[in-house]
Length: 191
Image (tube, rainbow, N blue to C red):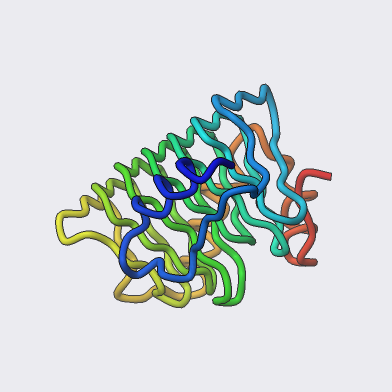
């Protein structure tokens, strides 16, 4: 990453993302990055200077993905850090990290279902979702967010399970048994 690229990304960080620091010389790849199928970020930090498009994106809990452009995916499972400096478009967005990782988006976000289980979500731009299902309610949304089914006021474990089954397990790109087994074991569902 050049000094100019690092400075440009740093300038785009919202004030509450003070923990993100970009430096010249860090490894990055130019975008667009298009993967036909699944993309898994297993460890370390990957910075993409452009757009990312894939069917399924999994960010492991010891990894982070920083996208300088837009992110398009059918399903995103973020156990690690994920920051999008452009727009987000995904059918299913799941965050599982026990509160120590962040998903952030500065652009316009269009999400089918957002499922939060002790994962911090921070949306700065426009946010639109068919459904949000938080377990710990650590979701920062803009005042003008549009949500068709909003469970921030609370939901029973049965409701959360129903939402998870509806949003994730009925997605025909994911194998139900292997996804559940891997997620609950804290492993990648893509192996």
